[in-house]
Image (cartoon, rainbow, N blue to C red):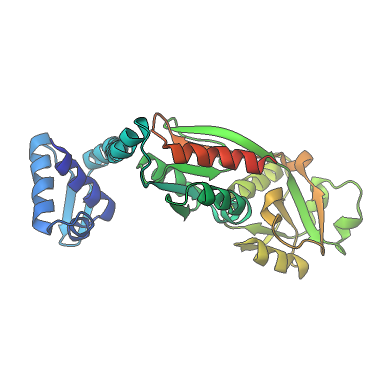
Amino acid sequence: MDIQQLKSFLETAKERNFSKAAHNLSRTQPAISLQVRSLEKELDLKLFERLGPKNIKLTPEGKSLFTLISPILFEFSTLKERFHESIGNSVKSRLKIVSNTATTNCLLPDVINIFKKKFPETELNILNLVKKDIFSILNKGEADIAISSISTTPKSIERTVFASFDRILVTTKKHPLSKKSRITLSDLAKHPFILTSDDTDITNVIKDVFIKNNLKYKVVMEVTGGKTLKTYIEMNMGISILNEYYLAKENTKDLFIKNASSLFGKAEMSLLTRKNRYLSKQGREFKNILISEVNK
């Protein structure tokens, strides 16, 4: 078993296609196929089900191997960078950050601006993903850091809480709820909700709180993005419960905003990394800038 076999297998597994894997690795398709077959022969296991020229999928054994070697090959790919860092040399590097749309739009602009000024040579990639895909991309070694309000993580992921945010009720200033000094869950249940489709944590929190209190509520819309949400709240289509940073960059002068943490708790924002994974100097500095800026 050698590194080229493993690289060929890993890229084929990612692409589910030998030709695409060959293109990504700047090799020929027959060479990639030969490497994979050689690896299968050495392991005495079938790693792919070949259903057609462009239709392959991992066997259960292939999935196990993929999970095992993804982080190992990523660590191998960082060896040159780690060596130069250890002897004090500066090398061009790449940093991949994963987050969802709300966090990227509301929390990261200032952080990224500061980071780019400090490390202008670092290639910074920001991936916007739904939260269910974050663990997968971290485990595969395809990202360095994730930023999320996810509260439950698998054993392979290290979670560091670096900030907490109130959850807020958002309505129009003319909405009946804006006239109440004390608002209960029963009061909220009487009005239709607009939820954010790209922030599943708060959506699940709302659902769980109402179920726990044996109350029903109605969802009339699911939208993506603060601007869209603000537009429909201002049209009086419904109310919303949000993490407070969600509308931080929006003009909220026409909205009624009230702290609802007593009903829905607080949102914890976390840094997620794969356990025991090397993080470059640039990655460590990005984390420091993020924590400093968000907690100003």
